Length: 336
Image 1 (cartoon, helix red, strand yellow):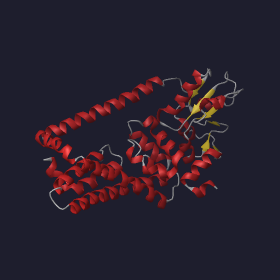
Image 2: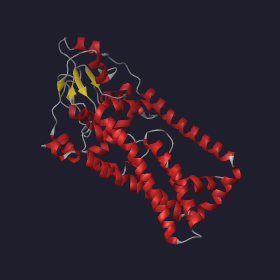
Image 3: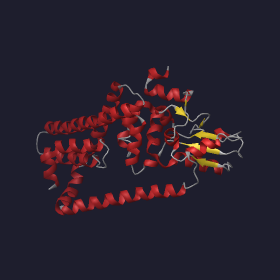
């Protein structure tokens, strides 16, 4: 049944599955690429070898085109709506507490070239695209690196299926024999995967439970003497997308970590903010600070978003040299 389905509807199925995944839905396309490579090789193995290679190339071309269609939509949304799109994607993610950090780290190191590999990294294939849009990556650069990445990803999937077609054939026969049982096994595996991810997230949230201060409380604290130290714990990518800060905030370089704060009076009150769900980045920094002897540390509930929504003042955030270098990798003209 599975063999006949892919043999008859292979290309439309590949296009639809890749498009659905690129739009952010949890329907992985790599298994479809692998199976299509397997079945195309098994069916074409009895025909002309060049015809089989052409069929495999067509599958790769269709998958690449489909990925570009979905990615262009997210790129435009990232360019148009910036951090709001990233916040929406994170709210839909099972790893929303830290979903931006990995793509931010990749873009910080490799710039737009990171798109060549992001499709191989679960959780980043969709998120990296609106990040590129929000960072102002030129469209031509985006199309080139995204197309290269999508083509490599599709080629690997189809090629692996083709190379191991003879080995996988007994498994396909077993799946055909199981029929509906195949769908049940797949659904059960998905439930286990989702359960593991949610458990990990719940464990992280329990670990980071600690008192918070809200925007109004922070504003009141700033009128006292001495006022609290404010720490901007956002990732570099988030600061580039939204280059403002709470007035007087110390921008924390995550590469240097809390060692950057050495020399500050550890008895003072510290308020740490980020721009992420559940204040996870701020809570992680606060946890580390407490371990280093800072006794009075609180994450800001709701982070920068809550401060802005309350109507309190913000000031422009000037790019430091490290950030200029990272921006230069993404958009060379913006670094000058």
